[in-house]
Image 1 (cartoon, rainbow over the protein chains, first blue to last red):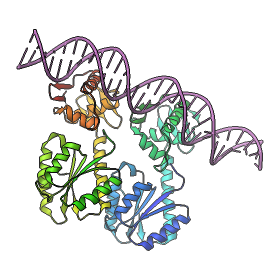
Image 2 (image 1 turned 180 degrees about the horizontal axis):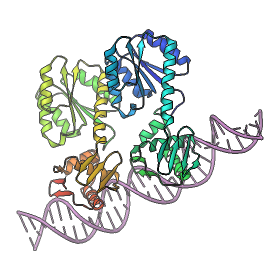
Image 3 (image 1 turned 180 degrees about the vertical axis):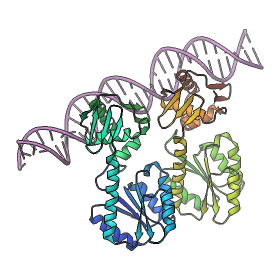
Image 4 (image 1 turned 120 degrees about the vertical axis):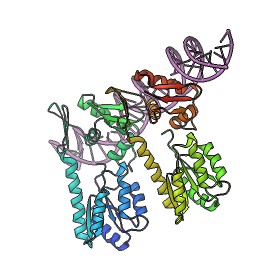
Length: 226
Length: 226
DNA sequence: CATTTTGCTTAACAATTTATTAATCTTGCA
DNA sequence: TGCAAGATTAATAAATTGTTAAGCAAAATG
């Protein structure tokens, strides 16, 4: 991941709720941004690229479901966790929400404590997901848990950025990742690094692996290919 | 796409609306042109070749629907996004607008913020469409995600411009693309390149593919045909 | 706590690839 | 035939990426 501090975006039209939740999440080390309606939620999503988005269903401008649907349609937010805030008995919202790509629900009313532990659990869940699946491609094996890559069963130590970059490219072999996509995913879109930074990391990966598995597509990006 | 800065044309007969919308869009990095009536809208459309045209329905000289109908009849504006500005409850316009090739509607009144996010969403929508679908024609397969063309399952590497050009022609097999259309689409209409530039790229594609799939229509343009 | 190591980024320059132009042929057709 | 449009080719320009070394900062080490 690009950053250590997890970013959470909360959208709700009740200022009190926003305040109390964001205060408690901040206490627990999250970076919180709030939005008071659907449109603002989308705008903030683009600005800060949160790891988790909590959407109240009922909001002015654009309701939570619309926001979710909208964001899920963008490639930038495929990996973002989106959860809804719903009234306890609102079955309909649950069904609709899942249809449009929500990851989970939080039912109102909810205590700050429970909220924090819920949020913690979301991140634990994806951390597991993200890290637990080894990628195996020919004689190359990427082990997320060990942060090690094996080639012909020989371990190769990559630095963090190198490892993340390789994992990202290898997550979809053959697909070209635009330089911008890479920057967004590995560095985060608020970090600005020079043009040659990606190249240097690519070079180190190629060097350490010793095999030609990363192809340059000039003017476009890079792709992983064996 | 040929250019990074998206161009928007707004046509409305209320100067205040033009001003406030164009100001806000400009803030968000769009290049905005305005027109105060239908005829001017058409004139400007030809001059700047916008990526998005926003037309008020009710305008002097030529109303929005007429403008849309007119532009859609020209090959130059097939790919342009055209949206209407309509009063909230004007159902009739909606129906008519769709008939004449509008892509969407924006209902008045609208806040500048919402307008900007709407415009953003239009561009995201087409960006996605443009990039993600593979084209398959006989033994030829164009894979935008991989930036590779396959012929008989053999990958063929094309340079960026070559790939874009081929993709463009192959997007509508059999249809002749005028040299001007090609220039507009691949190079953008502010870039000026010599007459022979297209030819050279066409030649390289023909050479690399090894099959005769691009037909010259003398004095007109090129078309893709297997 | 000082020292060493490691990782990340940048800057400068080299190398490569791609894009464009210009010059020279071909070809079809009035 | 002679012209106009396009094809071809090679040369040049422009853009993009590769490489290397160096500077920092953070982490690891003793």
